[in-house]
Length: 413
Image (cartoon, rainbow, N blue to C red; front, side):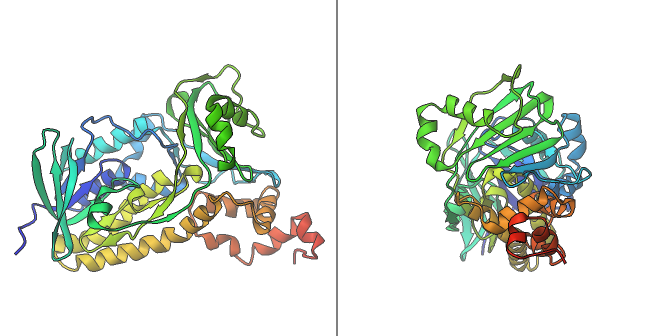
């Protein structure tokens, strides 16, 4: 017989998704082991542009995290988008805001909140080296300390919150489906940038892209996201290429008098990865489940949300000791239903392909028609499904506002 589990849940990774799952499971009454390979309580993810879309705000409020973010000076920002097909899209001024907060601030805050929750036992500086299995079902992890001492943490549920290159996924033999990404990113932090302080701006330049995200303490992230056709230019002189691209943004940030306060951070390979969100005894949240193009600022928000979805589906079965794997299957299906279509759309665009006719027509309409703009804003911030733009009530507005559509004989009814 398998050894009795010491914990209800063992979570690998004490960042956004792992800490969210740990706190919510513990608040539901579970015993949680939270494992983090980095010993520093102030550790944070460096290569991340960390915009949080408004779709994740309800989860942040449920966590009790919102007051801490406000205290840290997190910026409540709304999405703003520019395309060559009409310029700035007409997003509603009263759209729900998300959060702009650096990972340097966010990660320690959410970690402290989780670790301080009754029922959570924290294991910093511990590396997962093996998954424990019984009859093909995962039932915990074995961890190793810096002095090479090992310990088994048995749990009824193991949660992988350990990033896009998940160790748990490798050890449990749960591969990801990989889709190509034909852009790369260089970004840096600035102070004194003149750009709307309540707007998280991004540019879809067809095929390049860029983003300007305001954050706490007067920090602004400015990211250049060029097509890989420009790799030789950036490899030859990344500083100059970054400066040129940012300087050429239409209605871009004003850098006169601004100060760059970080090194230029680059990431050349960002493949889109999606794996099944659950298997018997194990679930995946955050980037471990889905790591997609960072341009649209979805990663942090989906880390919060996927952890909440897992807890919603699994907590009763976990604590009642019945039907846990059925609950995990429900989570897997819910995750795929909610994020699979978004991922397919984002991954398709990340190939660097030219914008299609229907996209150009829609963006031109959204720059002129506030109703279309509102629908696009809901999609961009992931508060609706990708089917939102197929609403038959929108089609006449989209076609009627575009000269090309009119030339093809389409008119608003």
